[in-house]
Image (cartoon, rainbow, N blue to C red; front, side, top):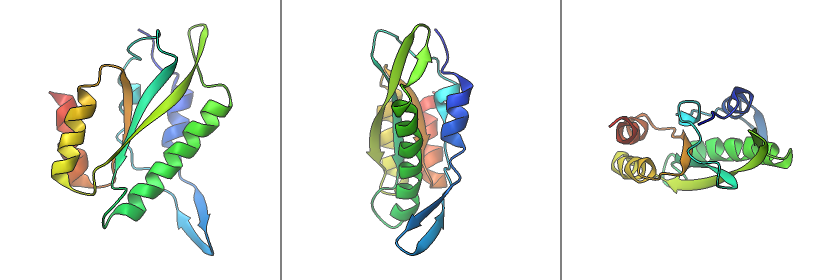
Length: 142
């Protein structure tokens, strides 16, 4: 199995940008548990590399989660617009799977279990809450 080239991982992770929302400037920080570099792309029979984005897209922590998600989606859309990622002789686009953990630790754990069971998932970006990240990461560890 081949790994996704590190230049694309760096591009996703280095989303520390300023975005403008109306008249406000908001520092963009992508807090990522990016397992993409640790996982080999499972199968090249597919036409896309599946990456999950998980975080609080609703609830009290939604502004942070939405900001993280939008930054990751921006990077992924730029990669896809450039033709995707070269894997062997094939160009593959990134397909995004979103999961809202609502800022709840228990929900983060369930999402982690769901994502860990997906055989065709290449990586996970997220979350912004420590408890949700820790609980979700446990599903991937064992």
